[in-house]
Image (cartoon, rainbow over all chains, first blue to last red; front, top):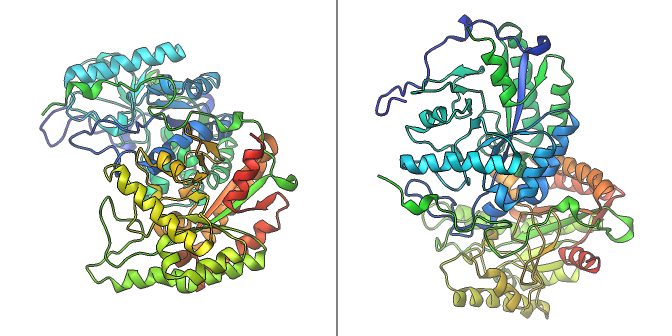
Length: 293
Length: 304
């Protein structure tokens, strides 16, 4: 990025109505990917000068316990529902989960899920990291996920969505294919980096379960309806453009007993629509790249 | 500006948790539980009975629901008091009509100030759980073990004075604990706490104290007050939760649905009807076992 400039120069302007159509396999119009965030939040992390990890003094029992619900209860509830309707996961992984709860990571591996890095912990923020520190978390991520899953990570969602001006250049330098940190589009798009071939894949804040439940204060049924509306529109437009819909999840939110039932109905709806291509982030990026001149 | 070198060092990165309070366990891998009489979903109603002093304390933090305006905040002081003067009596009548017993997480100050209310609840067969001293009685690291010990014992003493015995359960203000709380609750003779929302069944801490998870996501405070949903949306959510848990129970064994209720929220005239309808629907479900926390704990303990 252009550090210090008003426009960080992350990408070039590319109007939605003037792009070549992207064709998904078998004539599908909307590539749908599900991004479960498998996270570990530390109970007593060091405090970053720019962001407190917890609102309460440590231990923040309710905050920590809420996240821990994922790793004891709701991961399997969420994962079962996804598997039942044919959705592979593309996992945004706090890679230290490979050490703390390898059982959760192994479950994703057994389901054939793809893994990318979401930093070491979701309680360590990248702001103000030195280049050496930032290289350290990237190299740690590559090695940790390789050891635990046999996969070379291809993508990145910054830990707690925290970056430095050099993050995207470093990701590209290490050969990463996609970033989930840019929210400017409904299609895969090129990213300007010093080297490499990094693209942005649409993740989503707007239909992220965290936004649904804690920004927009939706009920479980309202969130399910939101996912269906998002899909219906993108699938219809995709006949002309080829769209991407991401469903970003956190088991401790979507896997609560009052939300998971309506969520399953939304997945059933999308999986039952012949316009939907249920894919992983890597599949979508590869298919898009194959259609670039 | 640069970060400390140790910001990318992780001394507690190891198998299991980064603390020693309890051990990891996946709920779906545990031996299936069976609740009494062949029931599969325990419905635990827990009502918070709170007294908010009109002079709020911000040390260590201001409790949810506490005073909002500059002193004197008549508006919030009295609207909270509505719960213990009126709302709770609507709830008690609703429980009686539905034939269900609940737990009441009660500030010691409510027993000091309104002993006849606490006695009436206990006499009706409901359980009293200790809920600190009053809504200025939040616990957090930094207050010191001595102050924390005093707060716990004052809460228990106020309740014991009215009940003739100490409660067995504990709910902290805002579910907030220090690193010492589990040990101090054990030392005070308590059997269980309800603060950790990381599970949906009882489990034991390493020190022997039991945690009965009172899911804040399912509370009327979260759904109605924070997320500003209607009582009908709240009740639909609880019906959806019950449906899900009863299906899960058929495969994995007994499940639990905690309903955390606040009298000044749910006991309002325009909401109580929706809540009564929820009770009618859930009590009609043959899988449902309505039980106070202590009965759920005892049933669980007998199966360990």
